[in-house]
Length: 123
Image 1 (cartoon, rainbow, N blue to C red):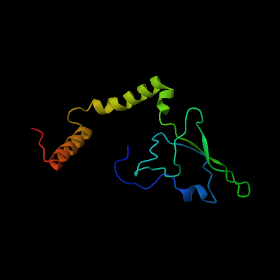
Image 2: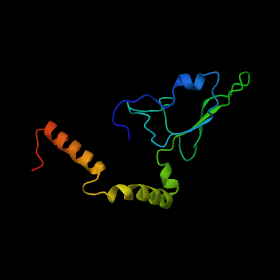
Image 3: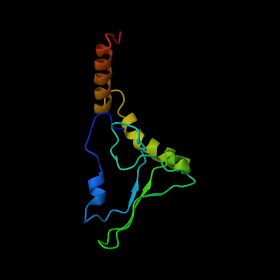
Image 4: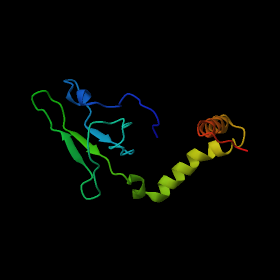
């Protein structure tokens, strides 16, 4: 998840570049309406009924292929068991560092800062 502005992964200029070879983009974040969208190259998600949308036609003169976009906002539900297994396996390493691992120390510090900014205390 993106929580602060960052340069886009792909831009309109990238798609129009004469040397572009990219032909398929799959956006699993589907953050189309967010100001922090890292793929500001499309304006609507795709659906199960129409999972792929062409966002640039092929250019036969330059040899550039068409660019097709997949942006189904619930794509992990296609393989729920696999998605859950992968997520839990990735999370396990972090959970095993509770309570003093680096990730948890950063989270604790960020939480304390958020409380302070709101004029609250953890006690």
